[in-house]
Amino acid sequence: RDIIPNSLIEAMAMRLPVIATPVGGIPEMVEEGISGLIVPPGDAAALADAIRKLIDDPQLSAELGRNARKRVEERFDIHRNIASYTALFKAALDPDSQINETTHNT
Image 1 (tube, rainbow, N blue to C red):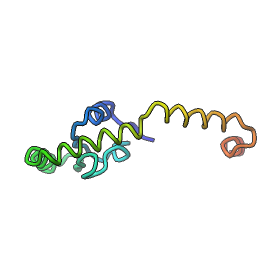
Image 2 (image 1 turned 30 degrees about the vertical axis):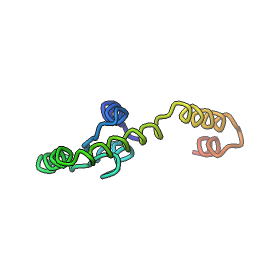
Image 3 (image 1 turned 90 degrees about the horizontal axis):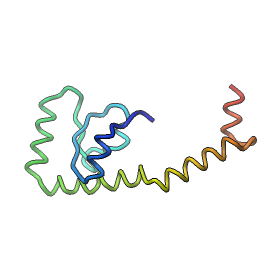
């Protein structure tokens, strides 16, 4: 997974509507029109349009903010992440796991 900026995660966790570019791991977090708005990198006109859209439609801004918070809770829930890492480590320690077969056969 590519890097997702902490500032993006923090803004989404605060229920703020976000405008981002589809680079790195950002598309994993921001779904266009659902949990935020996506604009092409370097496109100032698209950025201005997205800002105007959020200013002109407070209801959309609030909805994107709520959905953004849900997305962060789904992706960064501590209990879910601990369970995922635990399962990964258990699989890595299991000599019969696919992880070990792939690692040792390369």
